Image 1: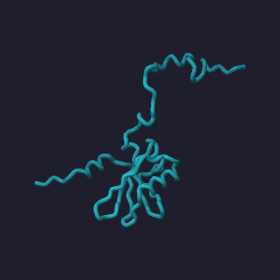
Image 2: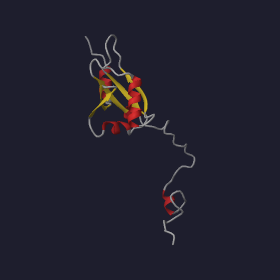
Image 3: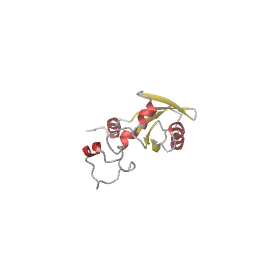
Length: 136
């Protein structure tokens, strides 16, 4: 006896398929084009003073720990004459910041024996830090 699923199956045109009104002329979904905003796929990174971490080391760390090719790019703020203290990692998936933070607001990792702190990227704080102070 065959089970009755009420139609031709998940991909078939059974009775339940008629309630979805999909546009047959719509462009195909491409996750590389139709993806979340960059700020939703980021984590803010801080380093201990005197222990900067290079971009390539950060990329290799995340790709090794969370899966190959999970990082899109890494930005490191490099002030003139001073070691870098912070940066930003942009992931390919919007899910990665939550996976990296493991339900915490702040998560510490060791990259090549150097501490690296990760937290959710806050676009408002980033924009405020870029504004110059008002001088009369």
